[in-house]
Each structure stands twice: as structure tokens, then as C-alpha cells.
Image (cartoon, rainbow, N blue to C red; front, side):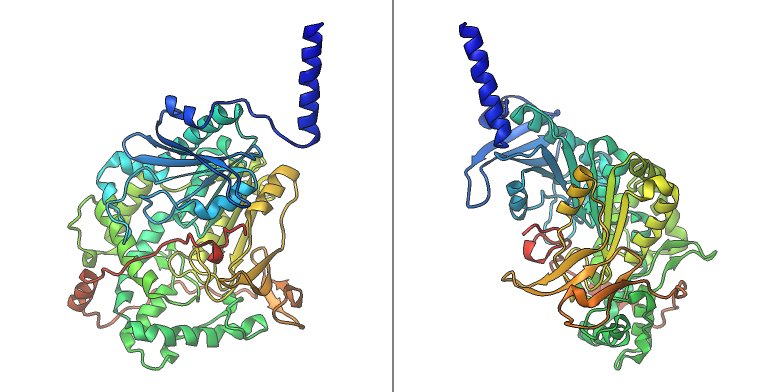
Length: 522
């Protein structure tokens, strides 16, 4: 009789939990996670963080796998059986700041991130010194993704008593490349992936950065006039002159029209807007769009290009960037980056991910002058062809006007894609045209725009220009692509070398300021 009574009590309690949507977890306590390794990692700390306003209490765990792969996992009390892996940026080396992602804890995601498999020796500039160690380089290429998800899911299973039902990735720049690799190399671990401003074609990107290191010879005082001239030439092509270039595909900009540019500077600007090609016409990397030139991105060509060449490709810190020659050096770049370390995501593997029914959203800022959104389009077209009808329905590409490299520029800066992919994965609600906003630092919405599926762009028709309802999604007219680089006359290599050696300005890559990021959830 007592046994029957006890069973009735258990059934009643279970029914109450089901009725009110309360989940009873059977697992170990936060502090007890310290008692054993998970996923092969050493647990270095566990902290139970109390609730703060809308943010629930959560267990914060730090761990190290291997020699340097540092990992952080946050496990909220209101877990909804979702896992979210957050990618890093640049050369990684540090765990991304997860505090802005606490809003995701409010939605019941357990979140995790890593330092990409190695610890940076510098944080003021992109640091590639880890590349001298092949094991750390392989971790950075993609292995750290698999290690991190294994550790995170082991911790989730121990803490909650079950594994996540749905798993997601979100990242920008190198985190976008990580998203591609998560889909291609660890497809069984992820249901939905958001890859922003991705550097999937990293061999081509290296070639592009090295080809354009000389852009550092453009006087910084001339960047604003160049940017103003680009806006003047291209802004009106979307039906509204508002300082945002929305129809860059129909834009034709000639830097020779900019007052004060000498012949060399004109050629340098033209080269940035030209595809990097071999003599036979093979495109190695596509041109960047007509977004604003920013000094931090121009100097990043040097840090990112040279970092890859010195420490990963040649493993020779004394490599001279001025010795770069595309024809001679590119085979070495491709041979090491893809042949040795497999940095990129294989197209057929990505196609298989899509054909299996899993979801991929790719976005890229049209104002990105560090990584080419046209190269993202080109590689997506390859994927689209490989995926076929069954796969392409699970792929979306959004090119965002007026948005830079992982951070806002002149256009919208808020379009929360995580709920979009969650609805798609969990409820089958496929996204099409989205709503994006321009939000100021105080959270005020300044204007809204439709976020159109590529190749369409938001075209103003009539009405209040600050309202998305005044726009339609329109397909641009096909334009011939500019593929040939311009011969650059008169480069003073001694002066360029002097400037590069003095290049100690802090470089920012990626963005962790929630108020200015498309990854935000507020």
C-alpha cells in the first residue's frame, strides 16, 4: 500500500511539472562538476552565478583540453534543452566575452566557446605565433570545434542528466569559417548554423590581403573623401539617397574622380575592388564591395596576411611581406592551408549537411572591406549547385547593405538571426524576407529595413523612408564583374616597409558589443 501511495505521489509531481512546463533535471551539482574530467578535459573552475534581473542563475564552468584549448560553458537554470556554440574571431587565442550572450541564457540556451585551441601571446593585434606549432595550428583550423562541443555536451549531460535536443552554432569572421567547418566536419553535432562574414576561402583571403598590403600607402586623411565619393556614386541606385549603399551590384565607382588622389592611390583602390586572379583568369579571391575604407581594416591586411605567411604557411617569422609574389607564393599557401591543415569546409560535405535536412544561414555585410562578400556569394553558388534541390531549401544567404565586418556601419545593425534559425529547425518555419533595424546606443530604433534573401536588395518605393514597409526586395540588373587588377605604379617600397614596421595601432577584429551586432538578442 505504501508503495502504491509513493508511486501516486511521483506520478502527481510529474504531472504538475508537465502541466506548468517545469523541467526536473537529474544530474550533479555545479560544484561537483569539478570532481572528474568531462570530454577528456580538465575542469579548472566551477561557479554558481546567482540570478541577476532577467538573467537566470547559471553554472559557469571553465576547462582546458589538451595543452591550450581553454573552454567556457554556461549552464542556465531554465535550460530548454538547447546548446549554442559561439565562434571566435581573427586568430582566436582568447575565449570570446560571453557576458553579452547572457540574454541567450534567458532563452534557455546552454552556451559554450573556446579560445580556438591556443593562448594568444598578444591581444592588441592579431597574433599568429601559435602557427609555429603544428598541433596548435590544427586545433585552430578546426579540431578545437570538435573538442569544445564534446566537452560542452558532456558537461550538459552530467549537469542536467540529459544531452541537448537541439544544437546550434553562431559566429562571425573566423567564427563564420568555424560555422562552415562545424557543418562540414561535425555535422552530427549541429542542427542549425549561422555563419557571418565567413572566411571560408582562407587561402584566397590570404592572397587578397597580401596583394593589398600596399593600400597602407594611401594617406589616412584621404579615406573619408574616397568613402564620400563611393556613396555619392552608388547611394541613389537603391531609390533613396540616405548614405547607405544597398544596390552595390549595379555600382560603378572610379577612384580617379576623387580629388587629391595620385596615380598610385587610384591604382591601389582599384585593386581592392578587383578580383585576385591567376594569369589564366582563375579567381582566387573576389573583390570587396563598395563599403567605407577604414584604416583598421587596411592595416589588418598586413597583420592577418603576414601572420598567416610567417607563422602558418612558411613557419618563418623573418618572412618579408614585400617579397610576396602571387604566382610563386600561392601554391605554398594553398598547399599548407588546405593540403596540410584543411582549414576550409569541403563543398560536398556541406552539401551533405544540407541534404540531411539541417539548416545553414549565411550572412555578410556588403560594406565589409576586410573579407569579400562577393567571395561568400561565389562559394555559396558552388554549394548551391552541389546541394541540389534537396539541399538548397535548407540554405539561406543574406547580404546586408550598409553593414561592415561583423559590426554595424551606415545601415542596419540589428537583425536577430538566432530565433529565426531556431524556429526553422524546431518548428519548420523557413525564413525568407526578415526585418532589420538601425538601433542607437540607447536602444532606440532609428529606422527599419527589409532584409532580403540574396540576390535581392531593399529598394525604396514610396512612403516614410524610416519604415521597412516603404521598401520592396528587388533583384539588381546583371553587371559585368571587374576581374583584372591594375598595375600599381610608383610604390616606394622603403616607405611602405617603414610604415608597416611602425604599424602598432590596436586592431579590432569582430565585435562583442551587443548594441552594435547582428548577433544580438536584445
